[in-house]
Length: 157
Ligand SMILES: [Zn+2]
Image (cartoon, rainbow, N blue to C red; front, side, top):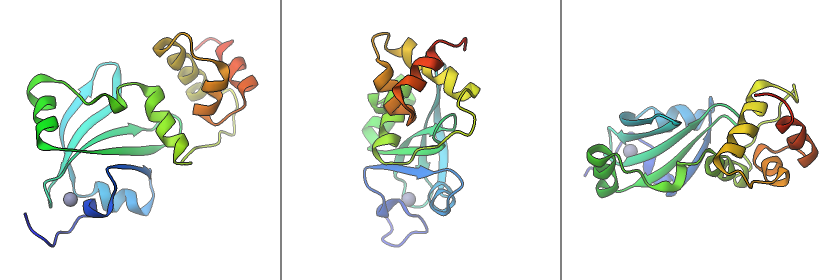
């Protein structure tokens, strides 16, 4: 492995949240090539490899609510399991887990339209993923008040 590369991978932690359209977005994602897409229900999930340092990254491209790329550093063994067996590390398999990571990093969006489709659809998706989720928790994940989350659930997706 080269000690000097044209990528930013070495500066990132094992888990990184990068705002879409930001400067780090272009610099970090610029050297990452798509290897595998999860597809199916997990439309946000794929795995890429850096064409400079060869690091594998599992990426959740969360462009519906908070607009971030969530990256998890994975080793060659995990990458091989994704490619050959379609077995993914579980970190980003639930949309709610992706939103939670973004929320904990403080990388959240604020919507001008409180009833926009993205919010309504996501509130329902979170409920489908985990039927016992509370309005408090949905509010936390979407960075809105619990009463607002409850109103979203009362609307048709
Ligand atoms: Zn790299």
